[in-house]
Amino acid sequence: MNTNKWMLGAALTLSLNSLPANAEQSSTDVDAKTVFMQHCASCHGAQRTGGIGPALLPENLSRLRKNKALDVIRNGRVATQMPAFSQQLDEAQIAALADLIYTPLANTPKWELPQIQASQKLFYQAGELGDKPVFDADLMNLFIVVELGDHHATLLDGDKFEPIHRFKTHFALHGGPKYSPDGRYVYFASRDGWISKFDIYNLKTVAEVRAGINTRNLAVSSDGRYAIAANYLPNNLVILDTADLSPIKVIDVVDQTGKHSRVSAVYNAPPRNSFVAALKDIKEVWEINYEDEPPAGFAGWEHNYNKESGDVVVPEPFPIRKIEVSTYLDDFFFNQDYSLLFGASREGEGVILSLDARREIGELDVPGMPHLGSGITWDYQGKEVMATPNLKSGTVSIIDMESWETIKHIKTKGPGFFMRSHEKTPYAWVDVFFGPNKDLMHVIDKSTLEIVKTLKPVPGKTAAHIEFTKDGRYALMSIWDVDGALIVYDAETLEEVKRLPMVKPSGKYNVFNKTTYSRGTSH
Ligand code: DHE
Image (cartoon, rainbow, N blue to C red):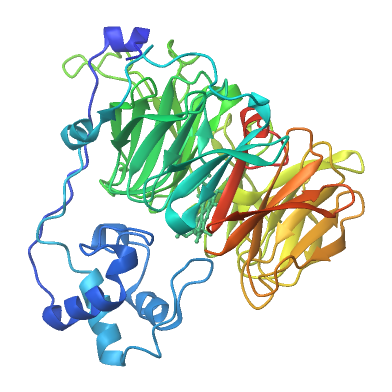
């Protein structure tokens, strides 16, 4: 267990989210429940608490009007795995489903500190496993490849492109796994709330805990001491001690009016010694500091007050400061020094925030639905630019990071999900994840902003998500299929070098690129 000075001085406040337990039933309940079990439960969970798809409960749907919900059930949802049901369900069934999802559960399952603590499993005590890797490879050029098809992960040697070990993960991992700063441990988050710690040196899962019911992602602090899980359900953030994954603090995500919110995502901001989270149902961004000492100046940080005198007393560990935003932020990205946050709502409103000034300082001019979480940066004609794919249109937008003007919209063969580059390669790669051209991958020349090659590795199968080796010489691509593959390309000649069979490989993550926060990869 980590202890910092604040924990010694201040009692931990466990601010927990109690969800309403209203037993009101919808008039179409019986029929709707049957339809739900047949068509929805496999993704959204039998209790509507989420699975591969999000939780469908009133407390998570405050931003979704009923009309829009009907439309989503009929026609599916852009940039998600939600299919259209208009061919399978009639209007009455669709209306009954919409009623059902706005009906509170009779007993919303609780997932508060006691439940989190009770779920924690420690498979190996500190010091029980050796400090020397049980295999021989460049520890900085390892990859973790997540194989969604059968819920496994593969540890890959990034020099030989040979699997070192394949192991079972929790069901439906989502978001990038996060490494400890030295690259020894990797932490995974599953959509149903499980956080696991895997010891790469010993090829063993060391600990796991269920931090939430429906989770977005996790981040790990720069000092490696803390992990934080961002949840949809309950509406909270959970700070964990990375030593054993025991919960340290549960932060209820609620505004001054008592409105609760899902968390869009949380990231580590290394130069700030903070985690930064954007919220889905409250127009705020929260910065959570994890230093031992209170952050300099206290400016904007929430304090503890003595209830009788009103005086500021010992501040709590993990103080929070909040920045108001003019829109909800579903997706966001930081500049390389983490002073600015670029955010966008699903509706396409884009803003630029100064994390130091704690206010909005500009608008982001990107139409459609930019996938800022996949944004990358590089130098172009003496200035820094950001590139982002778009989940709604076949466009990659190139934005000048000083003027925030869009320099160019590069036309692609369809909406893209993931974009990648590396400091040592002249190219940026972007997939065409959605639509009839999902089997294509574009290669963009970073100096001309032109597409120089379009690859079609396996006709008919989605080609997605690139990650580079440590030195940028090779680009690894996923063929997103149960009968899929990991394809290694020479990043200069763009020729295929090797193909490894894999079971729907989703993302892959290079230890060096991730732990050094490379400009070409997601953080
Ligand atoms: Fe993701 C990362 C949100 C759907 C695969 N996705 C992320 C992150 C966020 C996010 C906020 C960054 C977290 C991190 O890495 O710490 N994803 C969303 C959505 O809001 C969306 C559109 C709807 C949803 O269902 O949640 C969504 N994502 C998907 C999928 O359908 C994908 C393709 C398949 C899946 O796993 O469910 C998918 N998302 C991924 C992957 C990453 C990711 C592989 C990590 C990318 C990386 O390289 O870092």
